Length: 143
Image (tube, one colour):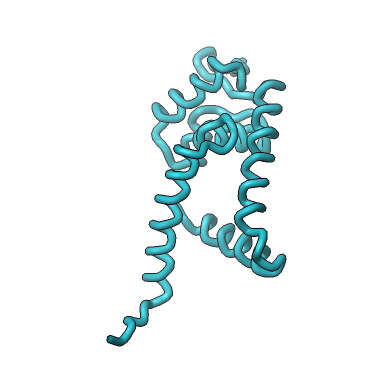
């Protein structure tokens, strides 16, 4: 029996599906850190880019405003972010990360880094660099 040669895009599509399934399984059953994926990404975005409104976060993550509102409300209840009122519009506000939020983000970032480092321990530095560059390039084109 001959092996079917896949187009590179077919291989990438299949490998991405497997990656997403395995990533979700690992983060659900063997939770890395204390933050779920959405909390981690929201805190990372606010920490990296400064205070941000719900609308801007929704646009950044390509999610509905109601979804981001629920997620940020949860972060606020946990004391990880706080609201900064908009002086021009009493209904609008931006979110800023708290000291607790920054510490939680740093702790989770370290735990995730250590897990990825462990998984890639047998890869050369060159392969790790190239993989990171290609993942970054791929993420930039997804809209």
